[in-house]
Each structure stands twice: as C-alpha cells, then as structure tokens.
Image 1 (cartoon, rainbow, N blue to C red):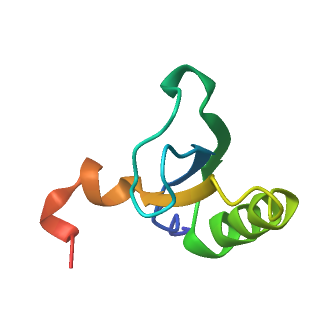
Image 2: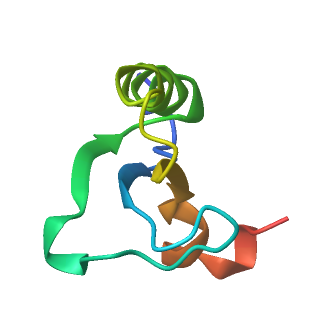
Length: 77
C-alpha cells in the first residue's frame, strides 16, 4: 500500500499596484494568475520567474498564497 503525500496547495499571482508601499492593485480584472502549485518549492520557482520577468516595473508585484491554510485552518501554524 502506498501513502499519498499531502497536498499543500499554493497560488502564485500578481499585478500592478497603485503604490508600491501598499497592496492595492490598480485593476483587479488584470491580475495575472500564474497558477496553483502542490508545494511551496514549486510555487517559489514560479514566483521568482515572474518577479524577474517584471523587475523593470516597480509597480508590479507577485505573491504566494498558502491556500492549504485556508482550506484546513486547523493545520495553520
């Protein structure tokens, strides 16, 4: 019998901010959803690639959201 490894789903997304000192997006309809990832390591690789791709735009920010913590808050820690 094989044991399935627990999925720790992460979302990587970003967009242009109104002000780099805040987390308020200029246009929510234009958010870039990079994707969903089964662990932090793969999400970080995707985040890093998008951050490097947009490095010349100081208003652009990408984020990693730990969706697994929202899906099962009892495991947040």
